[in-house]
Figure 1 (cartoon, rainbow, N blue to C red):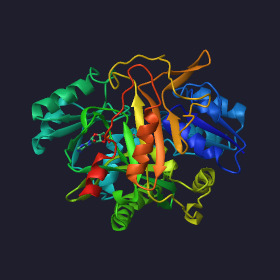
Figure 2: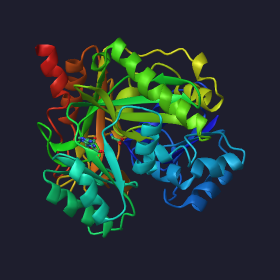
Figure 3: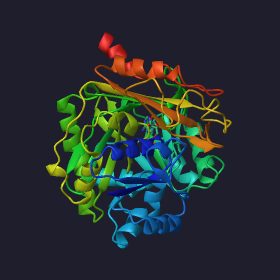
Length: 429
Ligand code: AMP
Ligand code: GLY
């Protein structure tokens, strides 16, 4: 079987790595892929913002399965376009992907279906924002409606700051393009959990839970990033809590989308805040998380391709799941300066011709921002590598990842040394 994966990050490298283990897969093409994925796939150049180009590539390749990784092609309707041409595609349609691509759609959907989420208002002008925030206490969260690669959420410590943030989003000064709509939200406190599920449009299966570390600095300080590291253990959620989230959040979401004629087939990533009044939905993503996927897939013992095909065929309920017990962790090595400006094209030392560590059995280096230049691996993005390991305990997974990181070098390399700190503290308590 030939599989075509759209995307170029660590998530897609992990998807390609897992797909390569499938008995049925004979060929993997990654479009556009990155420097580390060449070891498991053939790379095909394409722009993830060019719908026609992606469709033309899929037609030329004739894969038996297409997996769409990132949100941008989903929001452009790549799944719809390929389905119309008779292809088997894993991922939600444009209408279903609105759970991620429009925060106002998601909030109104949550309210319509009585799914727990922060109080909110949708505004289109500064005057509306000024009026709406009279009902909110600081801190106030101001969000751009559309996709903003993690940069569209501002936590404001006063009403005045919230109005300024709203102004900046509406006039385009903050994100580079003017937002038409904003969501104003109540600030929630608690621990965040990434609850990823597979859905075939009707049935929902949770993957193992994970916790991301979004801030650049240790102790969860500094600017937001795409994610600096993730761990996964079963202890993140008790069986009762998992059941509660399925019953009150994940299943009603999938049932609600089906009832609204936009059945959701794909990965439903529910970003949760575990608040004193219970889990609340912070956001939906309509795709695998990055770097959650890296940590989740090293624990998955199922054949990934079979599981994704079961979603496409409406047979998810028939899949029997098998996960490695224990834990996993993915630590992101980023370019110095990220999430601000950083240099690229810097040589990466310590990895072999396959982009892996030669002496680190059991550790997977998933590449995010790497490229090949003159036959050598170089940095090409903010997040560069996701060093990932599974272990019997969280400590052993983290130890393997951190030992492995000692063998990798590029100028300005930065990684957080405290991934999993909350869980380790709880285990020690
Ligand atoms: P989002 O893209 O909506 O998930 O927001 C990105 C990040 O901003 C989340 O992962 C949270 O850390 C934070 N955030 C978003 N909404 C809220 C909220 N209502 N209260 C507190 N933090 C939030
Ligand atoms: N790790 C956060 C995300 O994938 O959106």
